[in-house]
Length: 459
Image (cartoon, rainbow, N blue to C red; front, side, top):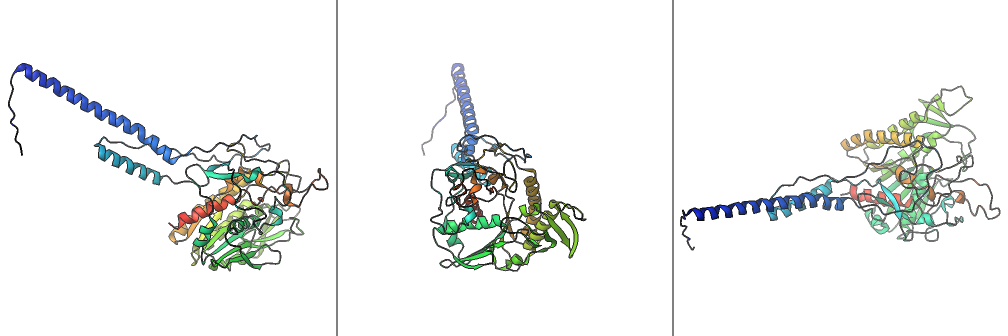
């Protein structure tokens, strides 16, 4: 080692010069540190917000809804958190910045149900010619719907990318599994969408159907995958006297304290179950508990106590969720929220129509009061059941499709629930369907979300 000798210079001018040099060095060091601090504090939040939150793609303008409705709670918006910054060496600073961004990005949970419908020029995953499982009332293409713009939108969550449904990956993931969709005709609509998507890889073989083809079961031989739809519109035991057009010959007898054994007796077979109720609770029904009539809903002229649908629906969800959460069979359970309709200028029975050809933007339509009440009950009962499920090691997920569905008034069959309704008379008055969904159509995006939730839940 070379040893330097340091001599003392006591000359005053020399000391003054050294003092000036020291001051310049100190000032330069402080300015350098300040520059680092400004650079880091300005750049980190910008880079983080760019990672976490991509702006939604623009969609074409649309007029406001013409009907008066009750406002729902606004959807939450995301914001980027501020990050603490410490002055450090350059190497440490880069390492800390990378780690901080990684931690902050992981901490932001993407809500798949907060988003927008954005234009999608690509073709739908299937058509009525490539899928043989579309029910006649939802086959809008075959029935002569003249516009096709409703096919070219996709759901885009605001805080993350939602992958498209991958039928091959889904079937591989579901080898030796059994899925069940439990509920009313919307559940049947949903399962037909899933069948159509999967049919692009393997055609299902129907192995069971009931007399009216409302409950059905399919099998995918190459993957030993079973798919069921179980028609149980109340989820409870009910005697229903209604034909295919919704005309009743007598009031429904609804047992508020008994689950429908049509699905509970099969429940032990299911690896995944998508459960949903809702709209049927608005219909006239006689309520029974302990095999005794306790009241009714919407039954004028009868000497019975009028009871709200809210009471009955809450009772039903409690029973359903208690059963699934307490069961010794640990299935992966989805609770799907209520589906809004888009009847305008009337209801389904009084000339209501749905003639829109593009989605709403957020703020252009409000949730009807009845849908807001139903979803509120679903959210409350879900929260209660989720805590029980966690203790019992049961997976319970909320499939909250209400908000995204509200924005799609263009996705219903409308008058095209029947074949060529205006072929003979262009001004014919026909019943519209503004509740179910065209296939292909917006309901296909539900399966994009379901697959993403399953993949997340398995990790």
